[in-house]
Length: 530
Image (cartoon, rainbow, N blue to C red; front, side, top):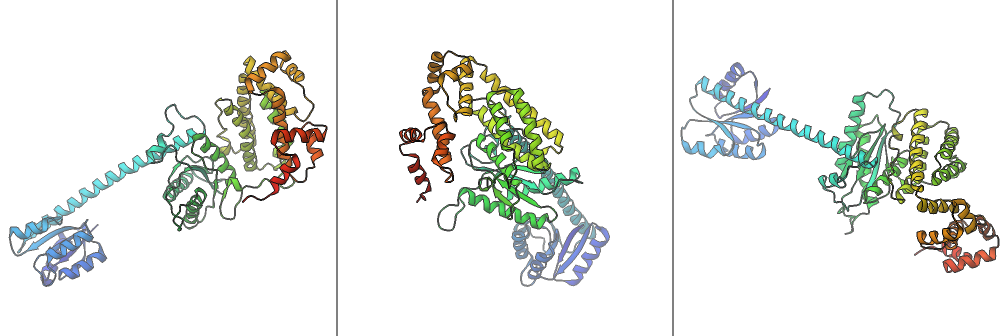
């Protein structure tokens, strides 16, 4: 029902008008009366009417002045002006304030009723038009949200159509070179008892609130996780004239989002994982998997960065590292059958160690797949992440899907190795990476790949840019550097672990390659920077 106010300095006029409206225009409710313009403005600000009848000639603040003030403060209100003077100048002065009707006293009943009904019709038409435009805007926003979510899903699944990179970033006002980071918002619980409507409401709330806090592209809800590509504003000041770091900007936005969640979703516990920053699509995909891992680790603050996640020892975080290494060795060689068998052993141990905690298993599988995906991409091959893992809820489905994805990646490597020259060198490099801690010769490696030693030496140098012995030495020295960072490792043991039986010879080779002795290198590591 529409609300109406009557403004006239004569009480009898107000009563008569009220009676006519209540009897002949029942869709309008008279909510207030005022005897002058000043009171009319005050009361209208309180009652927020849809239309008002306004006498022009009143003591103090007259009708024209009152209408001008109200038009500025309540521009949606419609006015019917009433005057004892049929003068064009009065009509002209008030029409610019949105006055719809001008009545001259004394007014016939039918003129008043028709004038009010005409204004009511105008208000109804405007409301229908606003509703129509609002519905079109809502539909457009929904379509944009669906397309945006599909874009994010395609990017994270590495199935972006040709010509699409950067398209949605530009539509969202984000430049191609702008640095961002992936965020994963997870809803605590297993979703048991959730209806599709529950899931949709949770997703729509997360999407709208996260966009309120940060410029972003929001992907679809998978399981109980929502992926977000966040691009914090670069001009946020830190209070000291400088700009906040990417990390600080993300923390500020995520904290505000989680506070909203506590107030508006008290029955849903939200957690946020944040990956490392990057600008390229590939870096954002990697950031997503880091954010997914970080979102699955409990944090007192409700959010956590992947870069802050501790590397826990096996006695605190049981993990089948030996089985994982056997599996990855088979994958690196492109041996699909051996990799499949190794994966079954790995999964058996992983499920047992995690006590069949599927969320933990998914998290560990995401980390496992990072190595074969990285390897294929380094060789210039297409490699898709197993994007469906987070949504799987059954141990057998999880095992079957992960095994299928791993076989696909391994067979891609095997096909790549099938090229005679390239494959021989890559298989030789994989062989060296597995056995650099032993005594190795060029002849033994050439025999492994089935090539004449002389031809293999020439081919290796041409392909790698270094000689066979220099490449092997590089592998050993890099591993030695890694071991020297651990003060518990003694030099003699390090020498043996990187393939040198004579510690003195190892020290000479290390110093020739690095420029300092192993002891000096270790001392330099222990000196605090800055």
